[in-house]
Image (cartoon, rainbow, N blue to C red; front, side):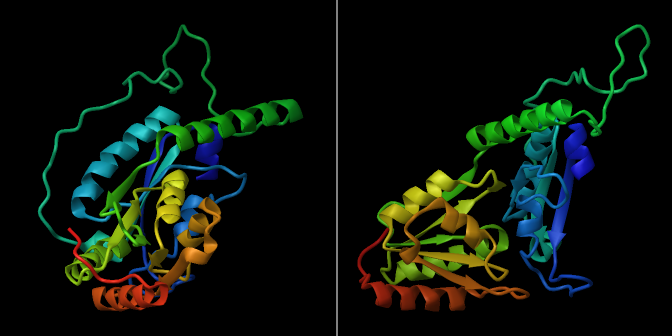
Length: 270
């Protein structure tokens, strides 16, 4: 991955996470968040990371991933888990419409009669490698400005906001439905891109809420990005399992407990 990022080669990588590290086990996990979002190799590169929570999104985000890879000449990762990877459910096979030009003026085609095209990640001169790294940095900053994607659910008037991605977010939706049926004002912000992370949107949601519950199938990796995104650390709670799936019942119980702790009363919610 580092060599591809340094050479600016587009690629799509699908990571279906299971419990680890090492040989680990076969239980679903979201333990690869750090590896995916904080650069899993040397040199400080970044890559877009897409987190589907359904078969439909596995389909649509894969198409998007290839376009982003070509657009930025950069690896792109789809980060799923063993639940998403083995799931069967209906989906709508929407047609693929490319959003990037098909021509790739950087590619090695073997054609004669044109200037040489050189793809490499080796830059031995100090000024050359510095210029190249600043170029890559500007590309990553453009990703942060243009490629943030997230899904809001019942955020308007939500006293308690859940932040979760992938399978954890999907399970949370059931718990949110149950909690709202009890009159508890609960919503969710689901990051679809883990890099770039929706920091502004998370900060806005945390600022308006009375409490925020971060839910992950790990010991708190996205939690760090949530904490970086806002100064309201006193509002944030965490529910995580490193090698297991939190159940809707467990999440609902956490919501009830949190509502009692902060004094959020049940009422009529839609």
